Image (cartoon, rainbow, N blue to C red; front, side, top):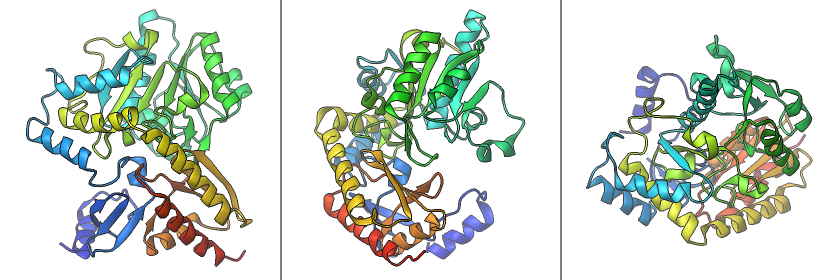
Length: 398
């Protein structure tokens, strides 16, 4: 089946939800993807920060293959070994309980239900969750409402109640939004779809302290920033805090769909039998994959390498492209970087030009280039990417 046949099938039969690039990938190796015509592309987008160990990683492939030859799914009516192993690794010393599901939105749904269940059990009416403008928490009806961007939620009104929104990195506004009906504050350590905007140290630590003072939960959505992406297993470790609830997804399974909601304290025991569930979540296949990713992060020097490569990426970007006045900011942590451009430079055109040069990059927020390469990216590949980006920018005149 060639690309044109694939595109025709999509045009006629697939829901019109995605603006796809005109390319079909069929295999990968390391940080390189190959399309159906044999063309190679260095991947600096990682399937939207998902393919943490790159492509065809031998340990990941073996674990998936071995588990597939045993059992892939049994449902959560029964125990399975890979899930127990992963539960033990993730709960660790920070969290008490974990719930596995399939996507970041589902993990955040679980977090939202924890808040509602606690309010119901206590009868105190603390059902409202404060989130931030420009946040992104998922595509389900509840999580798209939690998302502080009307462009995602407005077309699906009427929306569920129980959410209020405040400016990001504004602790004063957060405190002013606290009312007796608030049961939780839900934030990202780095706003992904909001343009790779990091929470300042004072803001996130201040939000943590204020949540404790007011007796409300602090929920951190680490769907994109967790699982090693920033050079720590959890991005909140950069801030020296311990949230009540954290959600993970994306890179946790190295490409296999898996997500989780981790909780401690009263949040850990809020949900009981029948309150929540999942058919596919925590299946043996997905957990076998996640065990490999987690083992690499916790038992090797991979986190240190992510930090080193992230610093190298920042330095390379700063050296080669920061001289352009239309490059407004280079930000992020570890292997999650955003390059914001002047509005006169459409970032989508840069993405297309980079693709034509054999490099995959993404976008987010207000005219921001998103870089989230696999953790196996090399310095040579970073140099090649930043050289090509500079070549494109050097030919822009505004």
